[in-house]
Length: 410
Image (tube, rainbow, N blue to C red; front, side, top):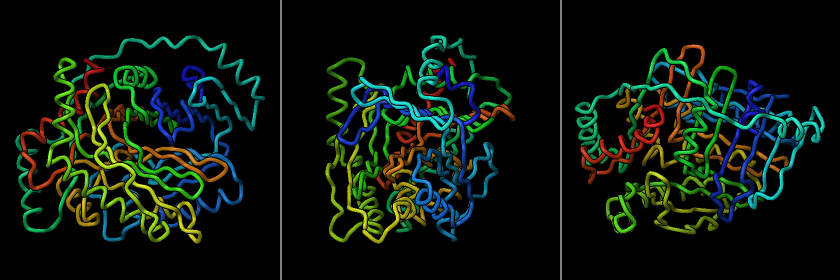
């Protein structure tokens, strides 16, 4: 499917990599070629999205950039220059949708153009995917170690002063004037770091290769679910050490504090669009294992109010609390002051909306972004800062997440 999709200039591939849970709809989902688009940097973007869907009742795939926060909250802005130039909100209705069920026993094809049989034969006749070796690249750090450590100290002072309780701080790694083949990069990333919310996204000359483990927002009927991640531990060198790292993560007061603050923020966000009394924490401090790290994940759910459009659940919860901190508006102002790069698509979301107005959106982390026109390749990684944060440990956690991306080019 990936090899066949390379011919299209607009596509989104979502891959669960075999991870399943009670919310799983697809093992893999691919949308190609736009027959219609909704693209906006204005306040009515989500309203336009809802209006289009009510009129057409069809699939929509696309993204919301982190910087859409500036549209949703007039107090906010982004002072750094854009490197990848994504529209703040962009969705497309695809010509062709292909999806594999969670049991991986069926492939379904829906098409507004060629017949499903023709699409199936074209996919089947595509050459086996044979990725070429990737170039050896060395990434520069937008914020050097010393400055990063000083920034963490500054943020701890903000917390001590009562300006905020927790703040997500990130750093950019980048390469300039490089030439890569994005499908090969995604294949390599997805092989080394398979994740339940992996995504390969192309919008003409812009590419994203994503290995996200985090769900931002899911809708099934009237039920809304969010699964914030806060709390990270490295994998052990052997089974015994790996088990110990999981136990230490689960018992860590600092990691629990980070997680429960974001859970509380998520509960508040969902309560703005859900029925009173329906918001609940389904799981607190769940420990989940991925190829490079263990993560602490909690699940919060609620029932969408009858008078609410489904897009209101996005409006009142975006950006996701796990990538901001609390209180939300204040920490987003501090993020713009302290970080040295514009986030753009990073810590935004990609996902789909079904013809029945159900949806699933990820959190864009553990991702590489490539601008084919300017030949600029970048990623951003970071972590949650609380008053108990140790600057050196925060630097090491940020670099651990970055290593998972950088190593595919080493």
